[in-house]
Length: 322
Image (cartoon, rainbow, N blue to C red; front, side, top):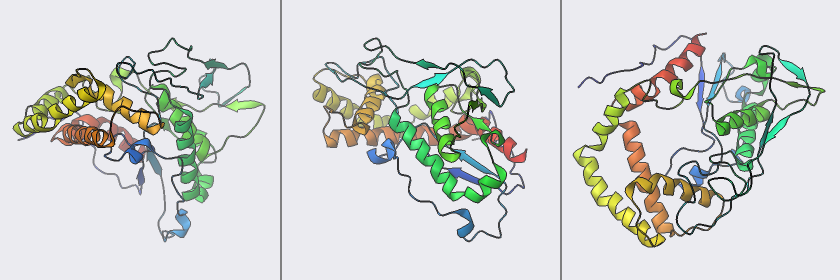
């Protein structure tokens, strides 16, 4: 059966390209250590000593997710009788820029976003879904790893971040993750003025960094088509329903299927931050396995990868060719 297409990936260009796909924190994994990410990506072999002297490197494209974050789903608390308090030392400071094409400005006053204690969806000083200090460290380390691998090439072709094209959706944690990555890649100089680097973004309704049903309505039909397959319905009955019952028993009240995404998010945030959880190791792994199967299944379903990420691949390829 021929699948409808919203955005086909363009034909490959003849540019020599090194495409690096290295998430700082995996979106989904059956391993909690992978999900939580690391601040020590390990030593990377410099390009020049990797047997590639005969290869001319023209571009480096790095695609990565945001770093460690606060709970991003639901409305808090994570579940009934959850009194956990989340403390975030990470923040962001900025100032209006009235010169959209200036590459530097004299240092003036900066204004820091600060979440009021006890006035957020989750107890503490953290905003919903905000990047944590661990998330910043992860991306600084990741940027440093790229610098060690491509140091000579970077110094020759990207003397400053003004020579790079930065792209992110318009969400604080992803914007701050890209800023942290760049700080590790090319450490900032201490001067009397601050450099200004553009991070290109879009309105949410036009964003292509993740599947967007507003741009590609066929995704809605593909999602329903996937969910109503006999094999998926059987899996749901055999694995998801028992999981919901087990979580209900662990929490002491009835949990509904539609609450699983928030529970999954909360369970992982607590685990990554070493916070107590009402779930046994076995139940946590059962939750991870179901999430991996369900989300992995829908995103690999025929037609979804192309319809969901074709726009992004086209955007990436346009920069390869440019």
